[in-house]
Image 1 (cartoon, helix red, strand yellow):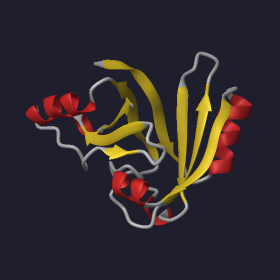
Image 2 (cartoon, one colour):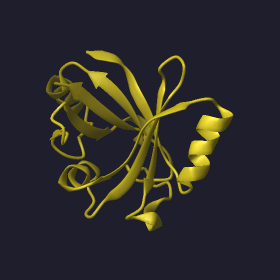
Image 3 (cartoon, helix red, strand yellow):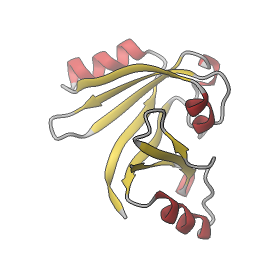
Image 4 (cartoon, helix red, strand yellow):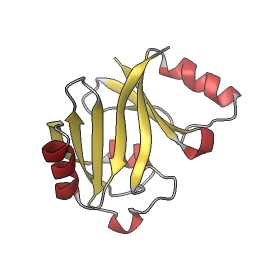
Length: 143
């Protein structure tokens, strides 16, 4: 059911410094740099009025890191086990059947933060689920 790790998300206070660290020092390449707003991101994160800059970086082996900087909620950028905490926040996995996996996790007591969400471009269904020791899994099914 799991096809591999999609990306690792890291919330940062200094987005320019973080980009410099990952790109200039470690050799990652920026493949996407955008500001996300709207109902999709609000519902996905369980917040209102979200404005988050997301920068996707890729290594030579195709490993992806996602840097997130919350412009709308800077006071929340401290680690508290939430999707918008500073630091390592989630591990995103590509999955083939998001609903079946969610059902299996529910049987083990792991409940999603929300119903699956359809991305604005209609290409993926997404859901966050807090799992073992507070790690957040982001399940992503390509449509």
